[in-house]
Image (cartoon, rainbow, N blue to C red):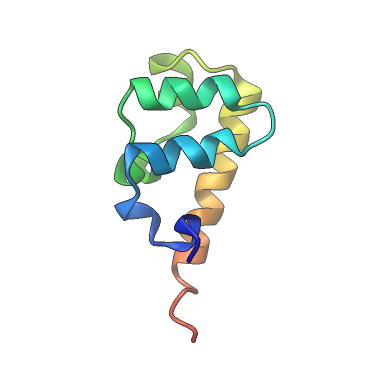
Length: 82
């Protein structure tokens, strides 16, 4: 079973690192997420301005990451189908 299919809120710091690392152009940013100890629950609470102010991430990547986080949140509501 693929890890990324599990509920994002129970992801570990490493799961989040792998998720961010898989996004285009976000390899360096993934290390920053790990340095900040962002796990799944923290990931779901992140906003663009957190990424930009706390982690010094440029607006473009921050927007992309937030878009991905939002789609994670959306898909959480659909994962009860068997």
